[in-house]
Length: 341
Ligand code: PMV
Image (cartoon, rainbow, N blue to C red; front, side, top):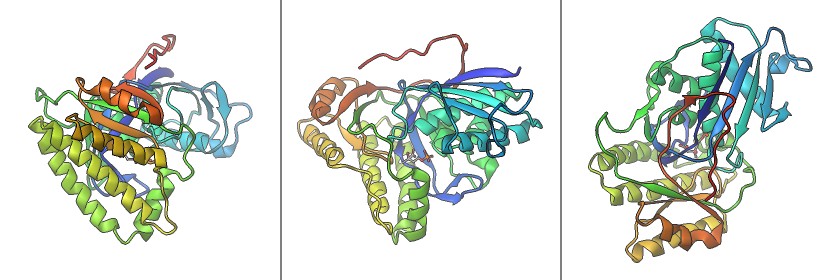
């Protein structure tokens, strides 16, 4: 096969990945855990070319990258080509490719569009280059594009093992087959849809290099992950929420402790954290988290989701999402379906 289309969804980490032990191999300093969403998919088609694309240069290895219908020659195109090099290495091919990607999330706004993007690209590219990878191998491949993409290969709730080398750093379902997760929802509050000023890659590097709290953060993450897996296994929604929120605030604290400091949360983001606390005082399940951007997700239950969404609606655009599918191969002619909130 020389053409393949795949779809993948973003994920929101409940225990965050923030810091690498090996930048070359994209190995994280600690494990993490996330919910793959049922909204904002990326659909990507990879088509192998017989010769370098017209107008392509050596920096893009003869590849073409088209994002939402517009040809891209910037950093996203370079990252895509570097990623395709991994696939070409695995497949023993040197053919360039055309990549068409359609992304339904606001790119770069902390909604982990790179996770969906590289998970879809890993699956589409591996198929187009004739590889038949199992989910674990796909998740290892997606990791080379973007750390959080490791988890978007998996449906529902994914645990990314930090591992010690390429073979041991992959994602799998948090709980063993047959074990039940509690029913959870995330209320996504998009307080600002613009791309973030400092990339997560750059800010992660800065955190490891300059924060006096970095080692403590990594130790705390490993501990939070153990507690989170135990809380999931006993379907303890309160504990899942408590760990999610305190871990997110720790991540933003360690990011703010860099030189120079980086701050992703905006006043409206903090207001959503405060709103979650107010909702809890009224007896509702509401725990806030935010990735590397100002947008906030409030973790709640299906029963409380509508009320939580109504309470935070004043702070930004709101959408209720739940656990979604893993990366799948799709028919390229199929239209993506996006329901409005
Ligand atoms: O892999 P990246 O560069 O998308 O980094 C993701 C970092 C966070 O979204 C903040 C946390 C996480 O675990 O997804």
